[in-house]
Length: 176
Image 1 (tube, rainbow, N blue to C red):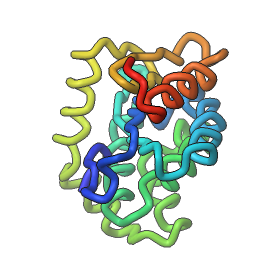
Image 2 (cartoon, rainbow, N blue to C red):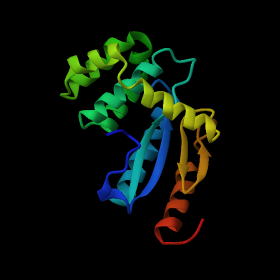
Image 3 (cartoon, helix red, strand yellow):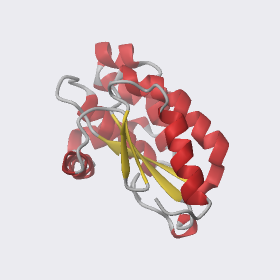
Image 4 (spheres, helix red, strand yellow):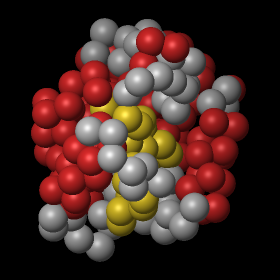
C-alpha cells in the first residue's frame, strides 16, 4: 500500500495530490490548509502525500522514505505532520530524528531504522519525484486536483480557496 494508491472503498473520492518535502518550512505552513481541507471535505476528498525531495535539503530523501514506512505501519499523514512540525530538528539531527518520531507515534522504530538502511522505499520516492518533474512540479508544496496544478512554493496566499473552488465544482459534478 502506498501513499498514492486508492483503495477500492475510496474510488468516489476526489483526489488531491499534495507534493511535499518533509524538510520544507513552506510545507509546514501548508499543514493548516491540509487540515482545513480534511475537516471540510472528510472522506469526499482523498489527500495523497506525494514526495518531491529537493536537493538543497539533505535529509528530505530519507524523510520521504520514512513517511512511506509510516504509511505501511498505518500512520502516513500523522508521521508527515509530526516531522514537518519540527523541521529544525530534522535539519540538525537527520535520520536519528526520523526514527525518534516513529517511536513517539508508537510505530515500530526498529523497522524504520531497517527501512532507511535497506532502502526498500527508494523506488516509490524516485517514481513520485519523476512524475512530479514530468507534470511540472518545481517546488513544494504543489497541489494537483482535477488535472490542475497549483504551486504553493512561492506563495500560499489564496491557494486553499482555489482548491476549495475546484473541489466544490468537481464534487458537484461540474466539468473542469
